[in-house]
Image (spheres, rainbow, N blue to C red):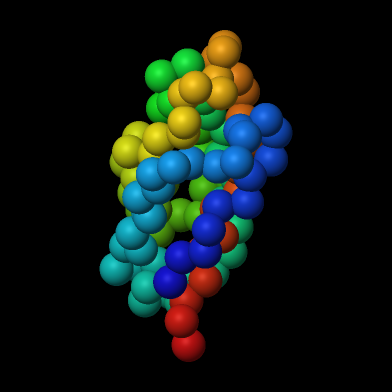
Length: 95
């Protein structure tokens, strides 16, 4: 029900740990599919900070996306300064 994030910017090879955002009941009932653009700061600790949903999917999904991304982790060995990053998270239902 969830596709891998499409990384844009300088976020390296992507997270080494990624928790998938969960669909809400409202999103499932609406059969929501689409891309959600998210801006955040990738800190030198390898964590996402200041997470901002650019184009909200609605259905109460914003909080699920933010909570999931707070658990993501990048390999901090390659992060020498805080970086502004934009990603697109693709939501697609299994039909």
